[in-house]
Image (cartoon, rainbow, N blue to C red; front, top):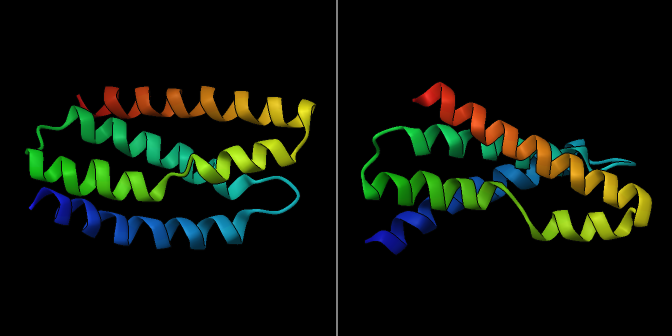
Length: 108
């Protein structure tokens, strides 16, 4: 049952990420940045909430896991080159962790 919930959440999160990222990505990968930050914020909120294990499987692992992307982040970071890629990676990590902490704080 848990695997089905994860798959259902990912079936919604992944297409939503694709639409948002492809519409916002341009010279810089703003779409990927936005979905990773938003997904981190939502995961922080969900982590603070008293969700059942099924709710966490559906929303935390499934939806947030499908919505956020490490693979596109790593490829785009590499494609930006050493200086811009390093700055993009650092900004994504710092802002995403901050968004997760803010979501957790607001949810608690």
